[in-house]
Image (cartoon, rainbow, N blue to C red; front, side, top):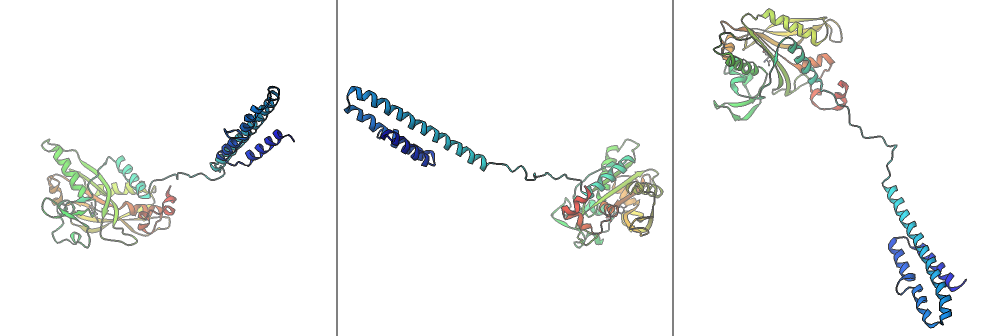
Length: 347
Ligand code: DAH
């Protein structure tokens, strides 16, 4: 092998041994750089005759070109390897299952609320919303609760560390009944001095709070208040409206309602409404679902209306309870624990 051939061979070997572009540039310098071996050869031409220079110069140039070609090949190979490594590192495993966005659903209590609103809406009831932090007056006094009523105690009602205009502690409303008063007062004020006033027909669904926790009570729960006040709205209307509502809510005529005499300070007479299904797992059991009655004259007065002229009924029911009966859930707390294994059954 000529000295030039072996130079090409060793250059190719060193280029081949370079594993990074930086190594390769160093190897290149050893052959093609200012002090490299090819440059040394070219410098040695000076000592030769013109004829020899021509021949030897052409050989050295050809050698240089072969070395440059080897260098380019190796450069390309290193660049290809780098790209391959990059592609491998960023490779996507298309066989991995995707990350799904779960298909959500309405909470069963929200469903119950929506159904209640739709059914009463179709009967001409307005739907009202109001504060969950209430004053003592709206939660109790306006509803004819005596000063010493146990519902006002700290054992029953959550109080907020803040007072109302009369210096009484604010409370987390223990029922939606304050909405009767808020809505009726706004309605009465709106039509004051106009002679005639349209009937009040409203439901007020929302969150309520009590110091209570067991399988059928949660400290936060839901109620839906109902109020119908006119000049001739009687207990008979309460019975027909509520019976109609229950049949539509449970999509069945196969149920019975019982209006059991009871006591609430804000109604007279008062009743507890029980329901019994003629079929299904709860067949034949009386289950309490609401309190109701004819609105007490003192409460009508607090509405800003004349109890000699305006009469009607009110009710308060538990949408949580309605949902429990509808879906056969036996522990109310399941609704509020946020456990997807439970909730996803209602999708
Ligand atoms: N507010 C009562 C409660 O929380 C339920 C109730 C009873 C509401 C009778 C009413 C009613 O409007 O007339 O237990």
